[in-house]
Length: 221
Ligand code: AP5
Ligand code: MG
Image 1 (spheres, rainbow, N blue to C red):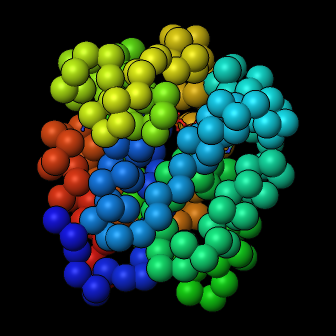
Image 2 (image 1 turned 180 degrees about the vertical axis):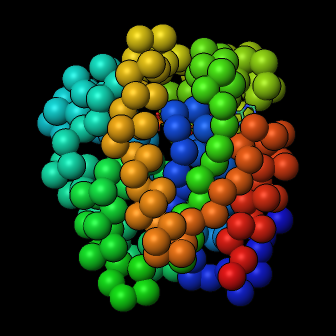
């Protein structure tokens, strides 16, 4: 269901640990708001699929579950957000992830800045279960789950029929590293946005549709 004009333009960040459902929710939310979905991880994987230098530079960090250096990420995402299609609003997923990135985003957006930052809260046990069963479309990167969100046809994306595969960084060692990195480098952003009075929290451990409607509720002024 498309949401009314009172929600636009809207600039939203989805925060949360690996596997919290940022990608799943950001896609639906952006569609309902009629704005663009920008996911830093998806942008890096697109670069890798095309074999660009940026993709190659990011690859070693990503495979180990480490953050790609701020200068590279900031330049890539801010260039994307500055394009005309983002003027009507944007749902950011996976960016910012460090204080440096958050400050760079605030500077780029100017006086009004972000409208809302929403944290998807999920226990670590549930995150490990989700990432172990996740499959991603090679064409559009839509996430699925073998048990909780299976595709209609096994091994194929519902939207474009693309092949589904397991991400390299969903191996157990890389997942553990990504959790540590999230706690050390991204959790400090919660206080940063709390101070700005922009942070809302949503229980991300519920059914996908329930999380979606709670997320819409969290955008209300
Ligand atoms: P990125 O691609 O952003 O990965 P991530 O943050 O680790 O998050 P995930 O994509 O793993 O999880 P998600 O929250 O999107 O969950 P999803 O919806 O898929 O980043 C990858 C790497 O790129 C980083 O490690 C880093 O190296 C680099 N990078 C990216 N951005 C960067 C930045 N800003 N700075 C520096 N480096 C950066 O859902 C997970 C699974 O659960 C799916 O199978 C899904 O079907 C299922 N699921 C979702 N919701 C539910 C639900 N409610 N109930 C049951 N199952 C559910
Ligand atoms: Mg994601």
